[in-house]
Length: 327
Image (cartoon, rainbow, N blue to C red):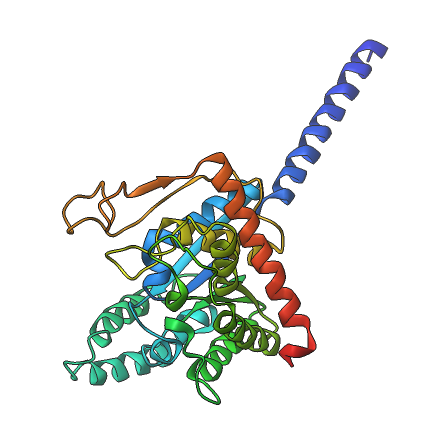
């Protein structure tokens, strides 16, 4: 073999090895995040999990964000437990016997005509039983959202049932995020006076104490909403004709969940619009519940400020959670 041929062969080998290592490195950089969202309409509205997916993948090149949702309108953590949502948390280890028992319990519960969610849960679990033999990955993150967070009482229902779900999540190595809803403090009109911070801080401290107990993070929407109302009183956080969070509050929520997921600021994310799933008079799909465009696109200025405010609220929550006040 000539020297020239040897050199060409060696060059080809080096090239193949280089390409192979590059492809291997590229594969190593790819990540998948399996995230389970358990909640009610505050998770369903604006397809929140999908907005978080857009943000997560935009802010983390190479990441595949796979969200799964278990949603029942108006339900609390205690209701989710009674509807068998815990089976979805422990899906990777769920047995056929456990799922059959849940189905039997839901059939009995569905006999009560006033239990309007039992039938929907029954159908969901019957479908799950059919798919139980399929491979199910462990969750990386479980997001728990509860109606008004029911933090009153000692212990509150939230403080009783969030730990039950959290224990199942942590048993498989998943992180837990508490998505704190805040409907009582959302404004439907621009504010002319400063918001009342006292009830907000009281609730935020209760959520921070629970998060510390569970070693969990949170999307602290009471704090985020308070900062938004203080710094941007011209913005509204709920619809006039619908008690739910509007597009602005939903965008803040997605940013806060992003912060909790990655412990980093959402500032600079390119996602600039959000679309609700409920429309004007249930007929005009291009208008939201207030008759405005169902998709809201934020200006560069507003987008940057909302991202900054969400990060500010998240950082304040971390201070509360890690302080002695949360003990």
